[in-house]
Amino acid sequence: MTEPVIALRGVRAELGSRPVLRGIDLTVHRGEVVALLGANGSGKSTAVRSVIGQVPAAAGEIELFGTPQRRFRDWARVGYVPQRTTAAGGVPATVTEVVSSGRLARTRFGVFRKADREAVRGALELVGLADRAKDAVDALSGGQHQRVLIARALAAGPELLIMDEPMAGVDLVSQEVLAETLRHQVSEGATVLLVLHELGPLEPLIDRAIVLRDGCVLHDGPPPKALGQHALPGHDHVHPHAPAGAEPIRTGLLS
Image (cartoon, rainbow, N blue to C red; front, side, top):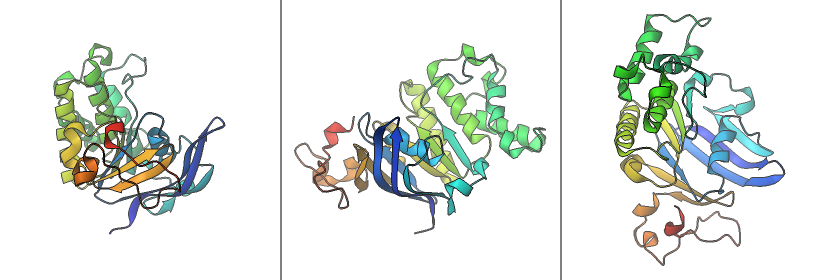
């Protein structure tokens, strides 16, 4: 295997005084598409937010591209799409303006050159919104807002793409567009970490699934539906390194 693009070792994290991550180990290697699965409150979003530094780790180590996170500075290599929100955060802006903000890390002193404008245009084409480039984001549907957020992340040409529930509450047309966008990114060699409630149309792209429950890793391997008999009702699967006393996963509990 290649060197991990993301590596968490024994990471613990808290929200307020509540433990959320309880010493998890998690790796994502270059070129992999990894799904982070689990019920609400299992720690999925906290895990990815700890990777990008939004939630500080109380213990353990986090590395990005082989560099300790506390020393990592090249954030243009990382594209992050948060849980569904309005693309402009309530600020009046056009689609192009929002997507362009994702390119700033690649510019010199915030000055856009031809390559930057082309990158923004290309990101909009990938998500099927080139014809809405001049429209106000307030005029878009919820699914289109999500596509704008993904285009913003793609504008910088990231090597690592982290997406938190990209399909949540998104219409079928936008789901298909997002799946095709990810296929393109994967074909270009991107590494992808996805927080998902269910695999849905992204299932064919997933190389590996990591299932969390109560802040612990219970499974790290093939996606649950590919586990053969373990994916059937009545069959359980426990990660070999799960803490003593951890409950087995039952695939029906992932949604």
